[in-house]
Image 1 (cartoon, rainbow, N blue to C red):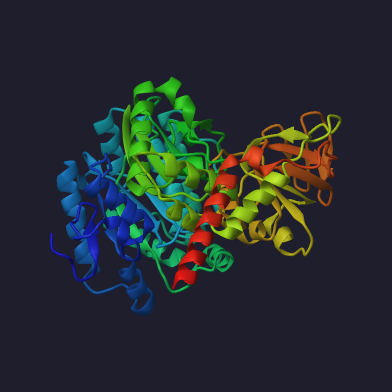
Image 2 (cartoon, rainbow, N blue to C red):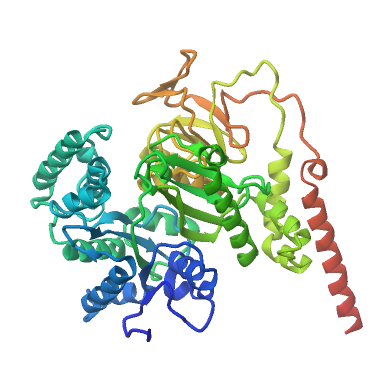
Length: 539
């Protein structure tokens, strides 16, 4: 297919160069989807990318002329590929609309899933799937997400309790949501799928300028004028029964660098359930027991991606009724210790074979120093220092600070604070950036809190489920109360939480013993420096 004037591309489009080199055009997510589709032939639900320049054009002059026709053409092509029609009341094609900036901004930009569901198409989905509960659960999810993301309805108004487990209960929850939406927004959910799609695309474009996105870019030093792509993809359903689910996985442990898959999986769920931190997930390795063939396929796919990208990858996937689909890949963020280990290990990996020079390029002198500091601070805690709680170590390092229970309180302080939340959301990023540590009572290893904290090098403990969180205090399983302003210490490696600053029984550790890869990397750095000096003398 010829390049369109507005820059809308099917994932399978032949760009003439590897898609992974076109991040500035396709965005990170779009480039990954195109690379997995065109270069690797992986099982990716088909779709298309509205490129980053289109977003910039929209920001400058509004909705571009001709974009409606381009989207219409690509959606109809997608319907031909899937054997379904968008808006068909009998067997509808449903879409996922996701952002995809040129640089990773986890959770900061918007997503809408199950788009295309209406009062008519939900009945068709129920008949086509022979599962009304699945269909109405999907409609409930869509109504909630569209109202919050596109229509600006407050999430507290959209809380109708846990999802009902029967058709009539789900129908009633949808009715309740619709009534609240009309009161809050002054209009009902659009019943035209094409209107839903246009509004969702604009909402993703608009999310580039949201307060949370601005705060994240300020912390990361990302330019404000980049913009984002929009990826429109056929839906696959992780909420379609017990043989379905969704997960996020790294090809290696992004905290330690260990060469094992690392991530979370949730049975009968969709992607937002995993990354939001609202559910307690299971480690991705448990998928081996749940669906061993799917796990083997996933491990094989992870290895192929790592060899192809010659780096650790971060992968989003869905299992629909026992079939594995890959929804995203990108080079993953990692701690300083993990960066050291991964770089050195990939030099000796025969399928990747990084050169020593490449390893040194990937791990700067500053990162090596950060890794050394992290190792030095790994001290044993005295035996009598009993932890208040233990969760999942999601971002390594130890931090001590006063407890605060809101992002606003964290952002308004000048001293060291630990932000304590049930789970964090993109709206919390300003407070997260101001904190020395993060503690959540829900969520897993790839929840929002875990991913953002790891990317920023902030120690984090997530999923400390034994803590009962109140308005300005939390209570431990043993009944001990910690109030706002009290000092606690968290260890993002072990997942432990203590009151105050626990005494240690050791002064430190030997980095050569703890991380031999660091010593190896430093030796290569000395050799490279010596070689360079020799060349300069000869010259």
